[in-house]
Image 1: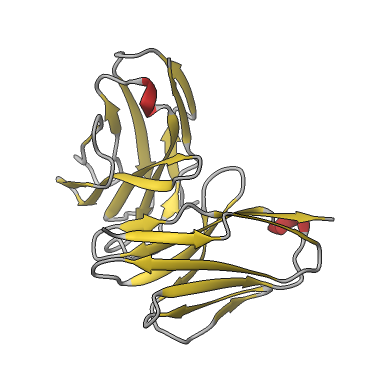
Image 2: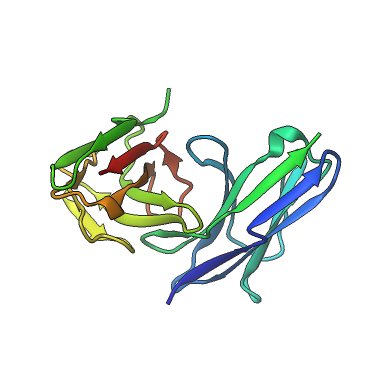
Length: 109
Length: 113
């Protein structure tokens, strides 16, 4: 059965800390791994990873995919209170997208 | 502005009363999808559509129907809602197939009493 597992489920840090969020997947016909940030409303797209070992960066956020070990990580450096959100990873196939349960990140001042 | 629009945003209704949640996108996307989000379970796909008149079941299709008569619209129909369908629902769309990043609507919170 296809599944996507994120860890930790919840994380509380202080501003300035660095965090690493994990996502492992077992999906038939895997095509890509996507990360989304969800604050109060709709998830917003962060990264899409298709190839192993190639880091994608956007400001303080970065992500990498390991297709051999079937996992991805999302790093956030020098966290800010505005980074507080639920971070979702999703594994896409030819037809659909399977999401993990999400990691709730809380950044305290 | 590129967007996915869902209506209504909030609805409280009673068991058995048919309801429809509309979804419309203005990006000419082929792929559209419905998800429900429940605490601890993340987003679970209900139905998806690869193009007009092409729909398929996701992980949790029971109790739901969809139609795709036009490219821009993908309504979600609950013929006989039950309390276990109380949830937050998201519509999403993307270009091409499901592997592309999806644009999400702002969500519809349904409460079935």
